[in-house]
Amino acid sequence: MDEQQHVALPKLYGASAYARPPVTVAHTPRPVTPDDLPIAAEMTDEEVQLLAMLHATDGRVPSTPGGSVAFTAPPSGPEPLRPRPFSIRAFADRIRRPRR
Image (cartoon, rainbow, N blue to C red):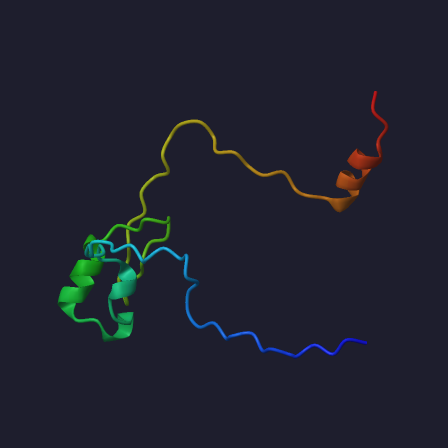
C-alpha cells in the first residue's frame, strides 16, 4: 500500500480567474409608479392628485381613500383567448388513447 502525502487544495474566494469584469450600465431614472407613493391613509392632497394622474399599467387601478376611479370600457376587437379547464383524467386519456 502506497502512502501518499495528503495536500490540501487551496481555497478559492470570489470570482474565478476567467470571469468577465462587470459591465457598467448608465443609470436611468425609473418612472413614477403607485408603489413609490406613501400609504393611501397618509397621503397629502398633492400625492392624491399625482396618484389620479398615473395610469395603471398592469390592469389594476390604484384606489384612493374615499375617492372613486372611473373605469374605461374594455377595448373592442376580437375576443381574447380563454384557457380550457385542465383535467388530469382527460390528459391521461389522451396519452393512453391508441393512435389511429
